[in-house]
Image (cartoon, rainbow, N blue to C red; front, side, top):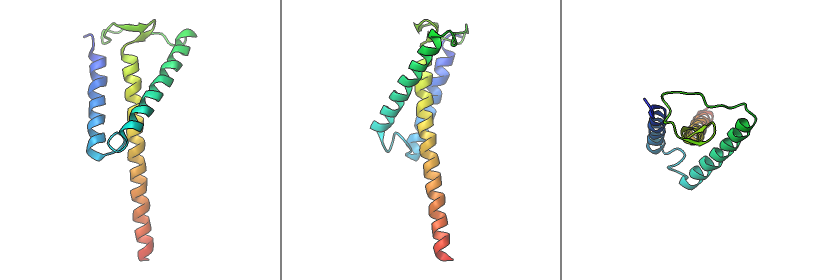
Length: 115
C-alpha cells in the first residue's frame, strides 16, 4: 500500500503536535524557536544522509509502503518528513523532561522549607 509509511509519520506528527499544544510544551511556548530548531536539525540530518548516501553506507530498500517518489537517489520523500518529525519529537520530549524536573525541584524545595 504505497504511502502508508508517510501517512503513519504524518499521523504521528499530528499526535505529538496535539500533545505539545495540550501541555504547552515546545511549539506552544516558543513557536519560532521550535520551527527554527526543527528546521536546523532536519537540514543537519539531511546533510548527514547525503554524506552517507555518497559514501554508499545508506541505500534505499524497496518497500511497498513507500510512496515511490525520490528527492535524490536513495532519498525517498518520506525521509525529510521523518527527520522533521524526529527533531520535533525530541524538542517536545526535552520540554516535557525540563518541566518534570522543574516540578520535582519545586516539590523538593517546598518539602525542604517545611522541615
